[in-house]
Length: 371
Image (cartoon, rainbow, N blue to C red; front, side, top):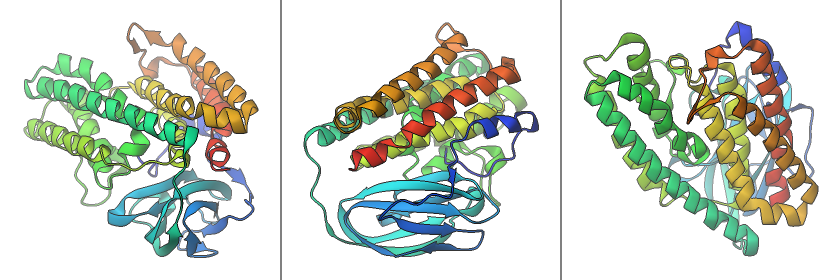
C-alpha cells in the first residue's frame, strides 16, 4: 500500500525511531533537482530536465511526513519516494527515457492528490542494453508470474468468502496477499487500484469506501460477514483482473526497479513492523516476508550490474538480507508465521533494527545502477 499517514500504535512508537528508513538530515546530491517540500508548497529548483537519468533531492521543511511523486501520462506513477519525515532528506533517481509532459507532487501528510506542478522532459534517451536490459527483462517475467499467482490465489480466497466458509477464507487470506506484497511498487503504480484493493480503514479519506483485502479481513476476523461482503469480494477479484492486465504493459527501467526495492523495505519499516497493516488478522509477518522477498528479487536481477559497479555494496546487501532472513525464520510455523501480536516488544525492535540496517545500503542501489 502507498505509505499513507499513520496513527502509530503508542507501544511501538520507539520501533519507528529504530527503523530509520525515512531519510537523513540535510543532504544534497550534486547535479540533482532540489525539491523543498513543506506543508503548503512543493518548490523545485527547475521544472524541466533532459530525458534520461533525472535526480531529485527532496528535503521536508514542513511539520508532516511527506512523499514526492513524478507522474506520467494518465496519472501513472513514474517514480516516488515516501515517508520523508520533517527535517529529513531523501534522494530519488528516476530514469525517464521519453520526453513529454509530466507532473510532480509533494504530499504532506501522505494523503490526497498533493501539491502538484507541471514538469517537462525534453528529448529522448537511448535504452540501456547489456546486463541492465537483461535485468529489466528478468524482473518483468517475475512480475508477470506474481501477477498470475495473485489472480489464482485471490480467486480461491474470494470463492471461500462468497461460500461463507469463514475458516477456509481465513486460511487463504495471507497466502493470497503474498504475490501482491512482492510486487507492490509495480502494483501501486496504477492510480486508484491500490487504495481500492489495499486501503486500510484508518487511512480512508472523506467519502472513500472501505473495500479490498482489508475490508474483507475485518469482515472475517472482527464483524463477521456482512450483507455486502460477497459484492466486496467480487469487486476485489475484478480489480485484480484489471491489475493483471495492466502489469502486462508496464514499462520498467533498471533504476525504477531498484527504487521499488527500497519502497518495499519502507513498507516494512512503516507498516508491517508497527503491526498496523494487518490490524485485524495480525498476519503481518507474511507481508513482511513477501516485501523482503520482492526486494531480494530486485537485487538478484540487478546483481551483474551492481557487481560490476560496486561489488562491496553487493556483499553488504547479501549480509543484511541474510540477517533479516534469519530473524524471520525464527517466527516461521510450517508454511506460515506466528501472529504478530505474539512477538515481544524486544523482538519487534530487533526486526526493526535489521530492516534499518538493510534499508541503508538498499537505498544506494538506484544511484549505482544509474551511473
